[in-house]
Image (tube, rainbow over all chains, first blue to last red; front, side, top):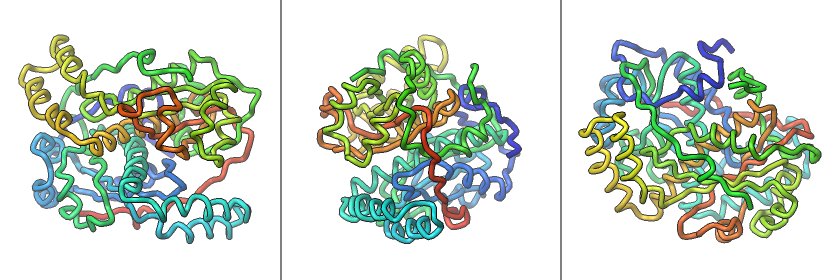
Amino acid sequence: MDFKNNDLSKVMFERHSVRRFDTSVKIPREELETMIKEATTAPSACNLQSWHFVVIDTPEAKERVKKSVMKFNYPQLDSSAATIFIVGDTQSHLVYRDVWNKVREAGKITQERLDQILNTFLPLYEHADQSFLTLDATMDCAVAGMQLLLLARAHGYEANPWSGVDFKTIISTLGLDPKRYVPVMAVSIGKSAEQPLKTERYDVKQLTEYL
Amino acid sequence: MDFKNNDLSKVMFERHSVRRFDTSVKIPREELETMIKEATTAPSACNLQSWHFVVIDTPEAKERVKKSVMKFNYPQLDSSAATIFIVGDTQSHLVYRDVWNKVREAGKITQERLDQILNTFLPLYEHADQSFLTLDATMDCAVAGMQLLLLARAHGYEANPWSGVDFKTIISTLGLDPKRYVPVMAVSIGKSAEQPLKTERYDVKQLTEYL
């Protein structure tokens, strides 16, 4: 892997949200797909991989999506080389049996483990309500999104996650089925054209308890 | 930062969920807190930092939490040096005005930006229902959790995220207020005692669309 920046501590600790990008910079679609592919090495609940990506990287697409984006996020959308909407797939479990049968066929897990997965985990999803499936897909998308934020920097770009969208209309605006997909996070990527704000964090002692 | 492993591509792409750990390995609480502090460099919605951490690192605490953990996650819980429950704080916005006033006082943002934050973003949270606040906190916890998974490897350990808990009782079992906190993710950390399963991912072409 030949990252521009492969220094984990620099990539992670010097990451700050950038909201204004250099509009002259484009990112090839091949590189965007490489970043998405790399981001999906993230773990997901039961390896359901309940994430889906819609890329906005043309002036026309940016205009089309605006009707479902809150105005305060227009600067990121407008100036980014690409904005990637990460949406959750609440029907990812419908292919679940096939996925795990293949893992078994490849000899990677025992029949006992397969039975456990299909008989213990699968029913949890098959009987789950929309709220559970939404939370689960949100978690999957968020972890992939976090990796994407780091990967943007690894590839020499900066990024910004945002979710200021009209939750009722964004999925349709993205051309997807609103019964199946749920909005989670948009990630705008490009070359920075600003000094980003370095925000503070609460003290770890305040945040941590021991049972 | 002196990580044991600071090679981003190795830390990210050779990460696999480990479910059985070497039970002889302990992690000092100071190091656990360092990892949590590092994980919270993650971004959060409006910098609300809606994450909270409960560490289980003694045999007694492991026994206490079991009544709210599904049996198939006992191996991780029992063998890990520490299991960190990341829970979402749905009341993080109650201190929101103070946090941003301090950022303004420190001269980091303009009065105009402060007004935008307090008048545009804050009302979204103050008028939000529990479902929105839960989703938002879930996203914050998941991105911090993803960083924690990477940081475990950076510190020379392996980890595994899981959420097989009884959602109705886990928060009380952790000694927290179930009206305020929501369960998101447990991360078990330790030295690996198994060859982890390397799971497959869907093809990026299947996952990606262009608007």
